[in-house]
Length: 324
Image (cartoon, rainbow, N blue to C red):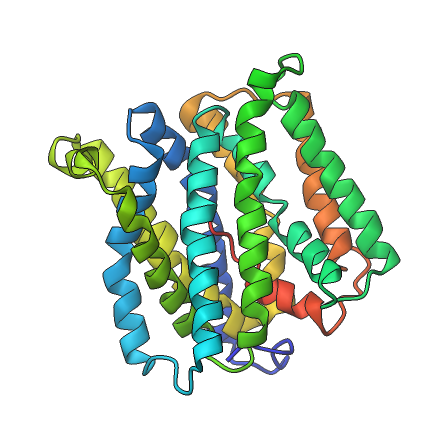
């Protein structure tokens, strides 16, 4: 079940250490996934094929997790419909927007735009009445959205134009999809095991990708280089299947409030990896945008003030695993 409070200070130090190591590892893997996606796209792999193979590789693992968890006992028709809709959003919606947008921008810029997901989740939760708007929410969200505006408009260092903004604007659909996924799934988090729910929504989302299968999908692995296959395995095994398991391990070991602080390292680390691995430019605008986005989300979630509330604040922590 989802943890509703931080762990006891007397927790086993071995469990605590494993949780920290799991979260540190998943942060590195998820940050690197943005560069991996960009490398595959630059190598000619279609955006839909990247998503298809990523989840085709991860699907057997998710099926095993769901089976070992005993499925989702007591799942009602309404809950099933909600979970299925969430799965399509987080797999099909999120990954197609991310991949299509990344074709037209850098991996670092894409990572910074995706970092807005917790902020969009909070904004949507306020809009539908799941959370009351507080001053720190308004301030934090304003800062974060300003950071995304900087990244979208000037992140690549070019003058503002339709072409330079095209990629980041498409990527914006990814955090919006993820935010809708979080809002849809919130009523289910207290009734079902978190990892089993993640596995179920991922499997449903994988089925949603099947209409995108085409001859080039098979060619990715059949005719692709060893490097291409390795990158696909990175996304499917490390970033998707094992990444979600490691994040869940960290949540259970440290509690959501402490675990979520690790997520703030993903965007700047993704920018750094893109610069090193893909020789992407790191402009002063990207740095400013990163500070504003990450700082704004931290303020909105109450991390800076140390006043994280017990309702949506903890839910955001539990659901803020990156879908990178």
